[in-house]
Length: 173
Image (cartoon, rainbow, N blue to C red; front, side, top):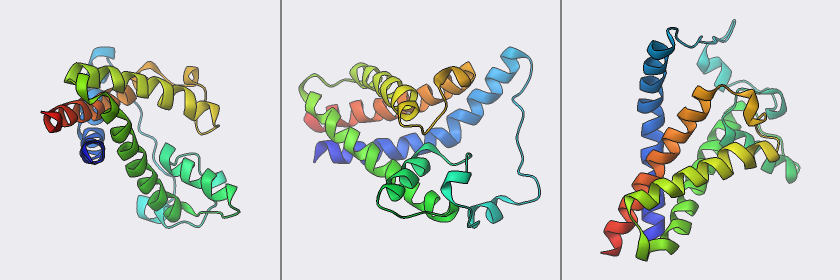
């Protein structure tokens, strides 16, 4: 139960950190480097039109990693998701994945701390985000992305695992 609560809470923290930390990180990195990252706009369509498109997942490179995982899972059972379905199921994949890692982290409850949470987050980022997604063909090789992309992904994984570590520790006491 502790792990489930911690995983759910930490997944919410990760979502909030993606909305808050990444734009902040991008602005800071842009100032340090001396130039901002270029924004890629969708030519000829608004974001709402893009979400409702019926283009098959295999043609949508701009989906989030969880949405791509949902598409691959659907393909394994002979289904094909459109963009809207992929976004919906990708959100579910994200919540289930985050919750399950909270349950897994709970196994370390006796030694849990915010430091251990951060170490767990770094390992989760390296194994899952950097290597597993690439091995499954969800993302390009890590070398195809700029250092800032890796730093952004690491920061939200650290926020997630900081929340997992402190929640589990608090529930263990």
